Image 1 (cartoon, rainbow, N blue to C red):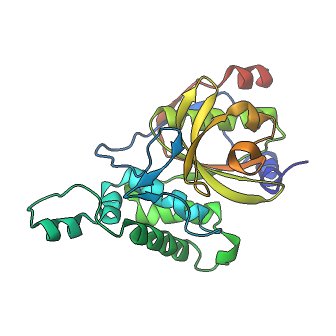
Image 2 (cartoon, rainbow, N blue to C red):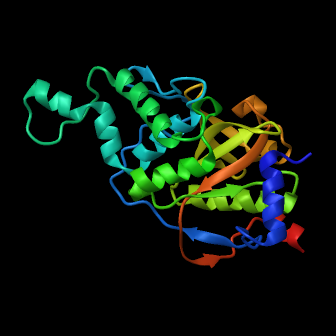
Length: 259
């Protein structure tokens, strides 16, 4: 059975909108230097300032992902959360002060709540955040990340799924995080792929646990994601902007299925 997003992706394919030819993966626009990410790419619990980096409430998974992505793209986001101005005032230092000031947890939680309000002005907050609201917030608030786009996924189509995983892997290889929307038949939860773990594995931030977990991509293809990400089905990816040109780096599986 197709998911809600799978049905929408199927409709896209029928009308020919928002589709990229399987086996052709666009070059990914790299991020500018100077990153100061909140999250490490190491598998395990994520902590900063003695605080676990998890979502502030059950509907804030998307907001936690956006805060982490904003910090990845904009060093100022991490600076504000760390409270470096507070540290500078306390120590009397001049210039940039590094470290994490007391109260990081309060600032981190309030930032998630602020992002949740900003992304859900019309959509009910109790229903989380739509992927289109996620990319709109990034465009308005994190210009350094570039214009992310929503890539719906039909996980019942081997060709479409292979193409989507190829696009995400290309982004990860270029150092660009990829938010993922997972769920059951309906979308339920945001996580974020941070990097490539191995030949067929990613490192993925799971905000409900505040952990980075290793995800075997075979679980995506088998629609059995729940042991790692809480829900079985992949609904959508948020992909970073493409650079100029394209390269034929599609997976062997996608090329074989296309033939």
